[in-house]
Image (tube, rainbow, N blue to C red; front, side):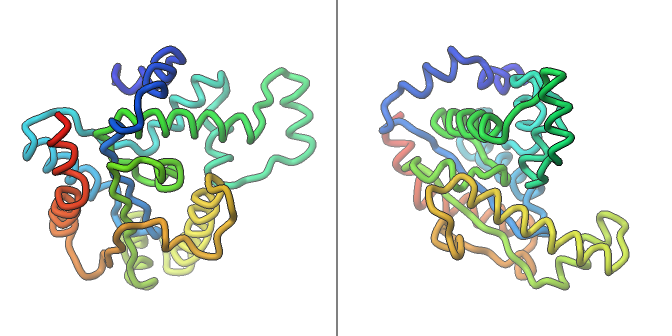
Length: 234
Protein backbone atom coordinates (compact mmCIF):
# COMPACT_ATOMS: atom_id res chain seq x y z
CA UNK A 1 0.00 0.00 0.00
CA UNK A 2 2.84 2.44 0.78
CA UNK A 3 4.26 1.81 -2.70
CA UNK A 4 0.87 2.51 -4.23
CA UNK A 5 0.56 5.81 -2.38
CA UNK A 6 3.94 6.94 -3.78
CA UNK A 7 2.21 7.58 -7.11
CA UNK A 8 0.18 10.34 -5.49
CA UNK A 9 3.28 12.25 -4.42
CA UNK A 10 4.03 14.94 -7.02
CA UNK A 11 7.79 14.64 -6.54
CA UNK A 12 7.69 10.90 -7.12
CA UNK A 13 5.63 11.38 -10.28
CA UNK A 14 8.02 14.00 -11.62
CA UNK A 15 10.95 11.63 -11.07
CA UNK A 16 9.26 8.76 -12.91
CA UNK A 17 8.00 10.94 -15.76
CA UNK A 18 11.50 12.33 -16.34
CA UNK A 19 12.95 8.86 -16.96
CA UNK A 20 13.94 7.80 -20.45
CA UNK A 21 11.06 6.18 -22.31
CA UNK A 22 13.39 3.32 -23.28
CA UNK A 23 12.98 1.97 -19.76
CA UNK A 24 9.18 2.32 -19.55
CA UNK A 25 7.08 -0.59 -18.33
CA UNK A 26 6.45 -3.44 -18.46
CA UNK A 27 2.69 -3.06 -18.20
CA UNK A 28 -0.33 -5.22 -18.97
CA UNK A 29 -3.78 -3.74 -19.47
CA UNK A 30 -6.93 -5.85 -19.31
CA UNK A 31 -10.06 -4.33 -20.74
CA UNK A 32 -13.25 -6.32 -20.67
CA UNK A 33 -16.86 -6.62 -21.51
CA UNK A 34 -18.98 -6.72 -18.38
CA UNK A 35 -19.09 -10.12 -16.72
CA UNK A 36 -15.78 -11.54 -17.97
CA UNK A 37 -14.02 -11.95 -14.59
CA UNK A 38 -11.11 -9.61 -15.37
CA UNK A 39 -10.18 -9.01 -11.72
CA UNK A 40 -9.75 -12.72 -11.09
CA UNK A 41 -7.64 -13.02 -14.24
CA UNK A 42 -5.45 -10.07 -13.21
CA UNK A 43 -4.87 -11.48 -9.74
CA UNK A 44 -3.83 -14.84 -11.18
CA UNK A 45 -1.58 -13.26 -13.84
CA UNK A 46 0.26 -11.27 -11.19
CA UNK A 47 0.75 -14.39 -9.07
CA UNK A 48 2.09 -16.37 -12.05
CA UNK A 49 4.47 -13.59 -13.14
CA UNK A 50 5.87 -13.08 -9.65
CA UNK A 51 6.44 -16.81 -9.29
CA UNK A 52 8.05 -17.11 -12.73
CA UNK A 53 10.32 -14.11 -12.27
CA UNK A 54 11.08 -14.73 -8.59
CA UNK A 55 10.02 -11.20 -7.69
CA UNK A 56 7.25 -9.47 -5.72
CA UNK A 57 7.30 -6.54 -8.17
CA UNK A 58 4.14 -7.31 -10.09
CA UNK A 59 0.81 -6.01 -8.77
CA UNK A 60 -2.63 -5.30 -10.17
CA UNK A 61 -4.78 -2.22 -9.81
CA UNK A 62 -8.47 -1.59 -10.20
CA UNK A 63 -10.67 0.51 -7.90
CA UNK A 64 -7.82 1.51 -5.57
CA UNK A 65 -7.14 4.36 -8.00
CA UNK A 66 -10.53 5.92 -7.29
CA UNK A 67 -9.92 6.26 -3.55
CA UNK A 68 -6.37 7.56 -3.90
CA UNK A 69 -7.27 10.11 -6.59
CA UNK A 70 -10.16 11.36 -4.47
CA UNK A 71 -7.71 11.85 -1.61
CA UNK A 72 -5.26 13.73 -3.82
CA UNK A 73 -8.00 16.04 -5.14
CA UNK A 74 -9.38 16.50 -1.64
CA UNK A 75 -12.81 15.38 -2.75
CA UNK A 76 -15.03 12.40 -2.05
CA UNK A 77 -14.86 9.14 -3.98
CA UNK A 78 -18.28 9.80 -5.51
CA UNK A 79 -16.85 12.70 -7.54
CA UNK A 80 -14.21 10.42 -9.10
CA UNK A 81 -16.81 7.67 -9.57
CA UNK A 82 -19.03 10.07 -11.53
CA UNK A 83 -16.20 10.66 -14.01
CA UNK A 84 -15.54 6.95 -14.44
CA UNK A 85 -19.25 6.24 -14.83
CA UNK A 86 -19.85 9.16 -17.17
CA UNK A 87 -22.53 10.67 -14.94
CA UNK A 88 -23.12 14.34 -15.53
CA UNK A 89 -23.76 16.67 -12.60
CA UNK A 90 -26.90 18.77 -12.75
CA UNK A 91 -26.39 22.55 -12.93
CA UNK A 92 -27.75 22.87 -9.39
CA UNK A 93 -25.30 20.28 -8.03
CA UNK A 94 -22.39 22.09 -9.70
CA UNK A 95 -23.53 25.41 -8.23
CA UNK A 96 -23.78 23.96 -4.72
CA UNK A 97 -20.32 22.42 -4.99
CA UNK A 98 -18.84 25.61 -6.40
CA UNK A 99 -20.21 27.74 -3.56
CA UNK A 100 -19.01 25.22 -0.97
CA UNK A 101 -15.51 25.25 -2.48
CA UNK A 102 -15.72 21.54 -3.28
CA UNK A 103 -16.20 21.62 -7.04
CA UNK A 104 -13.69 19.59 -9.05
CA UNK A 105 -14.07 19.76 -12.82
CA UNK A 106 -14.11 16.70 -15.06
CA UNK A 107 -11.00 18.08 -16.76
CA UNK A 108 -9.08 18.12 -13.48
CA UNK A 109 -10.24 14.62 -12.56
CA UNK A 110 -9.29 13.35 -16.02
CA UNK A 111 -5.82 14.96 -15.88
CA UNK A 112 -5.12 13.50 -12.44
CA UNK A 113 -6.21 10.03 -13.52
CA UNK A 114 -4.07 10.24 -16.65
CA UNK A 115 -1.00 11.50 -14.77
CA UNK A 116 -1.24 8.82 -12.11
CA UNK A 117 -1.99 5.91 -14.46
CA UNK A 118 0.76 6.95 -16.89
CA UNK A 119 3.27 7.26 -14.06
CA UNK A 120 2.40 3.77 -12.86
CA UNK A 121 2.66 2.43 -16.42
CA UNK A 122 6.07 4.02 -16.94
CA UNK A 123 7.45 2.54 -13.73
CA UNK A 124 6.02 -0.79 -14.77
CA UNK A 125 5.37 -4.24 -13.37
CA UNK A 126 1.68 -3.49 -13.14
CA UNK A 127 -1.55 -4.94 -14.49
CA UNK A 128 -4.40 -2.48 -15.00
CA UNK A 129 -7.97 -3.71 -14.96
CA UNK A 130 -9.90 -1.09 -16.90
CA UNK A 131 -9.53 2.49 -15.60
CA UNK A 132 -8.74 3.69 -19.14
CA UNK A 133 -5.36 1.97 -18.91
CA UNK A 134 -5.33 0.72 -22.51
CA UNK A 135 -5.66 4.28 -23.82
CA UNK A 136 -3.27 5.94 -21.39
CA UNK A 137 -0.54 3.29 -21.75
CA UNK A 138 -0.62 3.08 -25.57
CA UNK A 139 2.76 4.83 -25.76
CA UNK A 140 4.51 2.30 -23.50
CA UNK A 141 6.60 0.04 -25.73
CA UNK A 142 6.90 -2.83 -23.27
CA UNK A 143 3.18 -3.43 -22.95
CA UNK A 144 0.54 -6.05 -23.60
CA UNK A 145 -3.04 -4.89 -24.14
CA UNK A 146 -5.72 -7.52 -23.71
CA UNK A 147 -9.50 -7.51 -24.14
CA UNK A 148 -11.81 -10.13 -22.64
CA UNK A 149 -15.12 -10.77 -24.38
CA UNK A 150 -17.91 -13.34 -24.15
CA UNK A 151 -21.36 -13.98 -25.60
CA UNK A 152 -23.99 -11.62 -24.20
CA UNK A 153 -26.15 -14.19 -22.45
CA UNK A 154 -23.14 -16.05 -21.05
CA UNK A 155 -22.23 -12.74 -19.41
CA UNK A 156 -25.81 -12.21 -18.28
CA UNK A 157 -25.77 -15.59 -16.55
CA UNK A 158 -22.43 -14.83 -14.90
CA UNK A 159 -23.63 -11.44 -13.62
CA UNK A 160 -26.92 -12.92 -12.37
CA UNK A 161 -25.02 -15.49 -10.34
CA UNK A 162 -22.38 -13.12 -8.94
CA UNK A 163 -24.59 -10.12 -8.22
CA UNK A 164 -27.80 -11.97 -7.38
CA UNK A 165 -29.70 -10.14 -10.14
CA UNK A 166 -32.72 -11.20 -12.15
CA UNK A 167 -32.27 -11.50 -15.92
CA UNK A 168 -33.75 -8.10 -16.79
CA UNK A 169 -31.56 -6.28 -14.25
CA UNK A 170 -28.46 -8.16 -15.42
CA UNK A 171 -29.17 -7.29 -19.07
CA UNK A 172 -29.59 -3.60 -18.26
CA UNK A 173 -26.49 -3.61 -16.04
CA UNK A 174 -24.32 -5.15 -18.76
CA UNK A 175 -25.55 -2.84 -21.52
CA UNK A 176 -25.03 0.29 -19.41
CA UNK A 177 -21.66 -0.77 -17.98
CA UNK A 178 -20.33 -1.72 -21.43
CA UNK A 179 -21.37 1.70 -22.71
CA UNK A 180 -19.59 3.49 -19.87
CA UNK A 181 -16.42 1.45 -20.32
CA UNK A 182 -16.29 2.20 -24.04
CA UNK A 183 -16.76 5.91 -23.34
CA UNK A 184 -14.02 5.85 -20.68
CA UNK A 185 -11.51 4.29 -23.10
CA UNK A 186 -12.50 6.83 -25.76
CA UNK A 187 -12.17 9.73 -23.29
CA UNK A 188 -8.38 9.26 -23.06
CA UNK A 189 -7.83 9.02 -26.83
CA UNK A 190 -7.05 12.03 -28.98
CA UNK A 191 -9.75 11.13 -31.50
CA UNK A 192 -13.10 9.51 -30.83
CA UNK A 193 -12.98 6.03 -32.39
CA UNK A 194 -15.74 4.20 -34.22
CA UNK A 195 -14.46 1.06 -32.53
CA UNK A 196 -11.60 0.27 -30.16
CA UNK A 197 -10.44 -3.09 -31.55
CA UNK A 198 -7.17 -1.64 -32.86
CA UNK A 199 -6.01 -0.81 -29.33
CA UNK A 200 -5.57 -4.44 -28.30
CA UNK A 201 -2.83 -6.96 -28.97
CA UNK A 202 -5.19 -9.85 -28.34
CA UNK A 203 -8.88 -10.49 -27.75
CA UNK A 204 -9.89 -13.62 -25.79
CA UNK A 205 -13.32 -15.21 -25.43
CA UNK A 206 -13.87 -15.83 -21.71
CA UNK A 207 -16.59 -18.35 -22.57
CA UNK A 208 -14.01 -20.56 -24.29
CA UNK A 209 -11.40 -20.62 -21.52
CA UNK A 210 -11.27 -20.82 -17.74
CA UNK A 211 -9.71 -18.09 -15.60
CA UNK A 212 -6.70 -20.34 -15.05
CA UNK A 213 -6.28 -21.00 -18.78
CA UNK A 214 -6.60 -17.33 -19.72
CA UNK A 215 -4.09 -16.32 -17.04
CA UNK A 216 -1.50 -18.81 -18.29
CA UNK A 217 -2.13 -17.71 -21.87
CA UNK A 218 -1.60 -14.05 -20.97
CA UNK A 219 1.68 -14.84 -19.21
CA UNK A 220 2.83 -16.72 -22.32
CA UNK A 221 1.81 -13.81 -24.56
CA UNK A 222 3.58 -11.37 -22.28
CA UNK A 223 6.77 -13.42 -22.36
CA UNK A 224 6.60 -13.58 -26.17
CA UNK A 225 5.90 -9.89 -26.78
CA UNK A 226 7.54 -8.13 -23.83
CA UNK A 227 9.31 -10.41 -21.37
CA UNK A 228 12.48 -11.14 -23.34
CA UNK A 229 13.13 -7.44 -23.97
CA UNK A 230 12.61 -6.59 -20.30
CA UNK A 231 14.95 -9.40 -19.22
CA UNK A 232 17.68 -8.12 -21.58
CA UNK A 233 17.72 -4.64 -20.08
CA UNK A 234 18.00 -5.79 -16.46
